[in-house]
Length: 173
Image 1: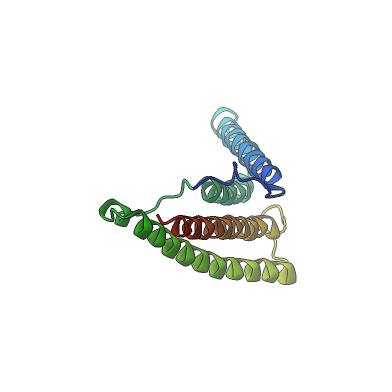
Image 2 (image 1 turned 90 degrees about the vertical axis):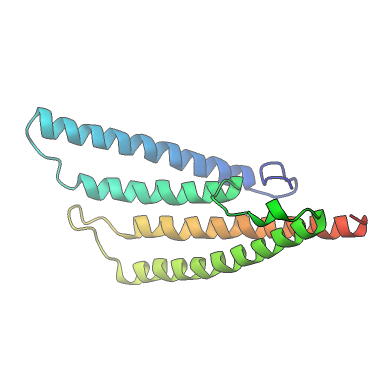
């Protein structure tokens, strides 16, 4: 099975990968800088940076959900594939992988639906953060986009695994 990075004929995959990695890098740097600034202000200058937790939390949502999408993209999410240790037949391993893919896609699509409803609620209600009065749509969008990307990647893997399985069956393997 090939990772999405190698898969030909899939438009915008490179752009999505660069977007996710850029968001993860920028938010990581900003979070570290803000924490250092907060510590410096609090313990060196004896003052306080009110609302720093609010800003850090919003950045963390983007970092976590783009990281989760990147984990799905790279197939580096934690999984319990103990069944493949006991099944010796290549055909049954592919079937087990297909079942896992179907369950993963079903769960991912369900949670993506809920995440999109959550974002829709955020658009309707427009809640604001307590200190800076920033729209909570900022972290809500990270949740929605993260789950949409995870679902997209898992659907692609399901399609790839299905094609591989049928090709191998036709070849007699």
